[in-house]
Length: 211
Image (cartoon, rainbow, N blue to C red; front, side, top):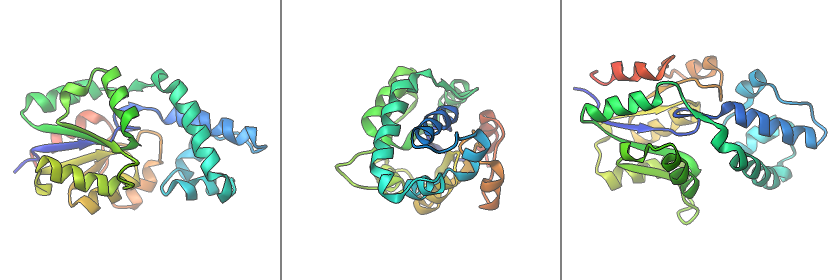
């Protein structure tokens, strides 16, 4: 029996934005007297909760609120410089052509998420686009559980495609299967150590659908 539903993470999975995250965080480090941040260093340190990630980068815990606000300001100003991941359009189209339903689940703010998916012309592929909404004060796992309930999807029929160990944790909390696409936010070794299944290219997801 194959997967009838796919849930996609956005940042890193469908959008190639790890490089931008490195550049912005490196800028924030240098503005506070810290050394620049390299890509490999970022892959070893990035993770959730974000407050712990910022501490690993050398910031004090009390700087977290200001850091997140400043990071968001710089990231949003440049986010349209990012491209979609290679094969993203083709894979989404192939899944849709095969009669399977798709959705997006992201820790990105709902309004920004909807806007950027519209910008790249992908909205028509998704039955739902689910980002975080401060009105619900819920994390990504809880948002994913609500997404499944809203759509009436059976978790046994769902494959979640993400790119971080947090996506792996979210899938487990939702009771759905997961595959990870290492895209630069975390080193593949870190994902393998969690026991996650990995794909090197997005089109390899298509070969997993008829399990």
